[in-house]
Length: 299
Image (cartoon, helix red, strand yellow):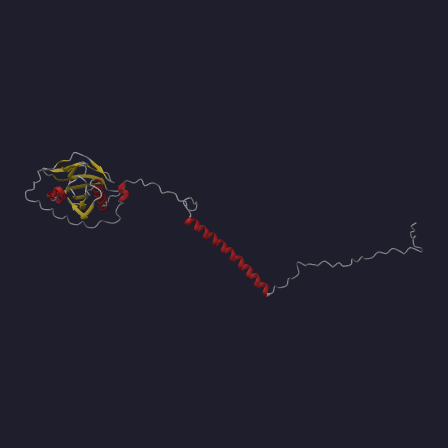
């Protein structure tokens, strides 16, 4: 059997209280927030400065990189790039002449003196009494006898849509594409832009001559420019372009043509146009070009 020791004999010692000490424990550190902090060492200060510089430098480099990437997107991006999308300009609804020949920005120079008309060869038919009057264009000019007959048609073509409805002509030959003509014709064209009063004679005159060359002659053709200058016709400012066109067309006997186109400021918003042409098959009538130009008067 198990035996247990009994209670100790003798009187019970009195109870006493006291501190209990834990073996192996260390005291918690005491932090005083208001105590003065020790000054950092010079090495610590340099490290902090380097960190600050690196922080700001990295931020600046990041901003620069974003800017470079954005610029590259704008420069090399396609039409679908929203950063490069541009709206189309509004359509230009101005008349053709306003688009081709804006009002002159400076006063025109002095016109060149009109050259004397080519002498009429002996035996040439004199001009009959009377003149061709184009009231719509505001000019009149010499009327010639046979083979010239009055013009009864309307030729409208070219960028400026000049309509030749008055003058004289005769058929010089018939070929596979129709009839070929010698002509002395007049018309008018709006030559001022909006409310401007000045006429750009040079620009408008050259455009009319370009329309004549492009619309009324075989293509391609070669221009031999003889005269292209400011002049005076009938006492009014004018621009005169005179040239010989060289061309080749099957079944057409004419291989060149002497042409003069004049734009005349008649003191109206619409300028007068004067057009003379003589095919090479009738070169004995070349004198008519200068003679007709010299005969122009303001009606």
